[in-house]
Image (cartoon, rainbow, N blue to C red; front, top):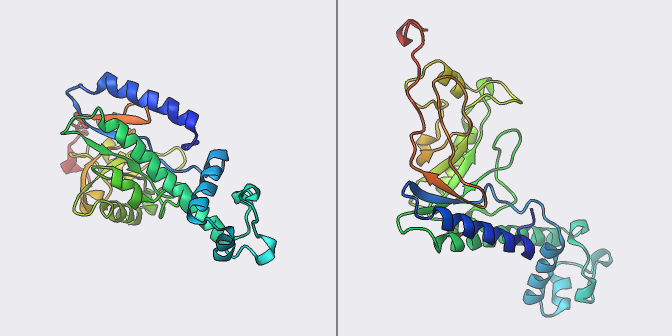
Amino acid sequence: MDIVNPTFRRYAEKIIRTLMAHVQHHPAIIGWQLDNETKHYDNIGRYMQEGFVRSLQEKYPDLRQLNHDFGLDYWSNRIDRWQDFPPVENTINASLACAFSRYQRQQVTEYLAWQAAIVREYAQPHQFVTHNFDFEWRGYSYGVQPRVDHFAAAQALDIAGVDIYHPSQAHLTGREIAFGGAITRSLKPGQNYFVLETGLRASPSGPPSRASYACRHSAISPPAPPWSPTGTGIRFITPLKPTGRGCSATTSRATQPAGSYHHRRRFRPPVPAAGGAEGRK
């Protein structure tokens, strides 16, 4: 997805405004989610690269200073005209590559702020604006997401949101939950945060999760792994597609790039197992 492409922006704005105008007065809506796990998606397209070069031109009116600061004289990387600026994805200059990565992240920040401004034209005063940030992915949430500056992008939000997926069974340590909670809680100091997606189901690519196992076996409360994010300051949690008899949960986001959250009972009472919980060990 090319978030800096003007054609994409034009159609995205039409979708946002049409959706917001259609549902803005619904009494069940409590807030709005911008987009979904937004990143720059490794965009090295025309508009991203042209924007990067323009940002350098604004900072470096004198090309000699640019060549000096980035060490471009080394290995004949010197740039003598802006028109000769080479494609950044193949650069061997680490400083230039890092500057481009920073610019890509800045475009994510600007993109979410752009969406937030449109949504707030329609939102009611009591409704919040949030976004579900994610982390690096290794089959589950792992470490810092390098394709977005969470701290800068969160400035456009009323409440920070996050998606945390963790390993299950013998691989469940709680480290991913604790790390994700600590990062997200720090995005808006003094506030709690939302867990907008998490796993309460068996994964097609892994073993059944403990949470869905507990749900199938008639847990008396919404199931959560032993190291629940509730200990890190969440305001609510939205499981994604849990499975198992006796459990019911939904995410009620509308179509991207803007979605709505509704007041909704997320869990119905579990079905008691034969013999009751007292007889199980």
